[in-house]
Image (cartoon, rainbow, N blue to C red):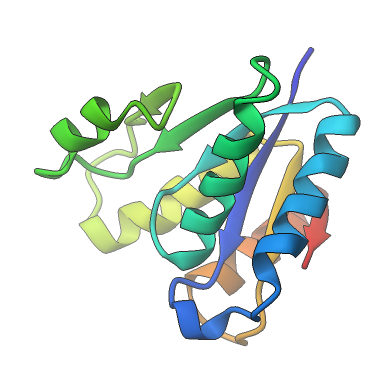
Length: 146
């Protein structure tokens, strides 16, 4: 059975270290060696975008790798996402009737619950990335912290 990893990190480019791209690539190469072939992304923010770019690069070399976007709600951007063909699949999970901001965190928890690993860059003491990181720790997920 293929293992799954989701991403958790800060949304702003200036929150990320200069060498984050290399750190992400090294971590994902190690995850692939451990059998992690499916990657869930929330598609929001700089860290997710950088992780997606690395997975996309590695997918060109290894066709077994899959990148799946998990969106918390439908937006006008959905048509563009399907046309981009960046993702192998786009999932819109049933999160119940929650406010759109609450839907983001609920989606993040769902990704953690359905993953074996969390690839994280979290330095802030508050915010959605911190909440997801702490949730993954409580759930006993394997965390690769950059």
